[in-house]
Length: 207
Length: 226
Image (cartoon, rainbow over all chains, first blue to last red; front, top):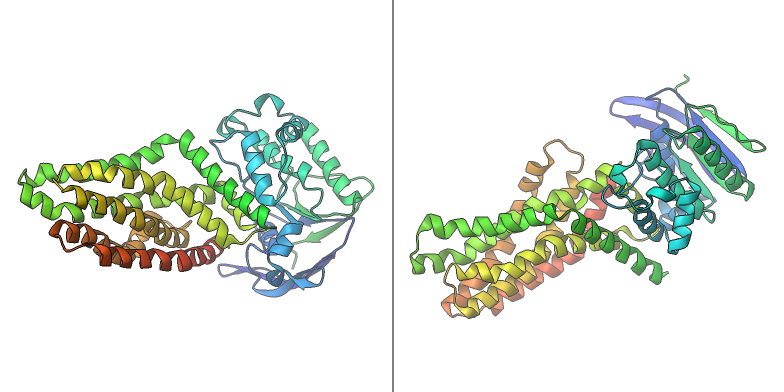
């Protein structure tokens, strides 16, 4: 269970939000809404433990995430604004190294199968710098196929730059994560249907 | 548990080496910078063997220092820009150890080539064989320390405007002890007094850097990503 209590976020001199509290339990999705600059990414980074909150506390299974450290990171998958891909490496190589670092190594056929599932089979060996925006995003999203054992997914604008088929595929991936008892926290400006799941919303920038 | 840490470190080093291989110009720039800077001195100072022998240790070591500086921005800069650094910090492994892996990869692609070519460059300065051997040894001990100390500086200045100049200001003063004892070792050998003392102190500096630099770098990286 993820619990945020009384979080306050200040960027520069501007207070983005304060007294933000929510809980996220198994099988639940949490969508963070808000205008540009309302602090959606900041909130996700605070929850992921990348930035500290000005005040307040984030806990994972009743332990403070600061104290849990690597134990929290083992349960967490974070997909940020940037894809975390190396331009000079191919999708297969990028995926392989990302998975080893995440502690979920996979063999070559499994890597290629995951990329094929994203419709990237033909370009699996090209340098990432030659791919389009949406294709890069799909390479990053291929990590999700290997993250079933991670209960908490934090996805920052995962639907951005994706074509409609990929949007549906990602919605299915998120749904199955929720069905096996995972949690997903994400931001998006698009309207996304996650049929048969419990989706809650946090609204930022409303004072 | 330990197995996955080793696998993660191996992945970090292998990835950086593979990128260096694909992007050879980065590695070659540092290497040729070192070669050219060292080679300029005999041309500028003139072919007087005694003078050249006198200045050789300092010249080679200062050039190594500047070449190491030049390559520092690459250690975390690209990773910071493309988001892989964020993923590295979120890796469920001790960041200190992963930082060591990053520094190792950096040294293998920038420090080691300098160490290997230095004796050849030393010949231009008419250094005797035993001084050339000491030069090789002192750089072998000293350049990893340069990479480790440099990692702290470059991690602190990530995402800052004018990072390269700022890194130089932060790091060069910290390089001074390594320079003194590194060049001192070569000069001592050339003078026939033996370099053991200098090399031991250089080794001690490497050990201190090994203990403190990855830890400080890990903290600096977390701060830079906030």
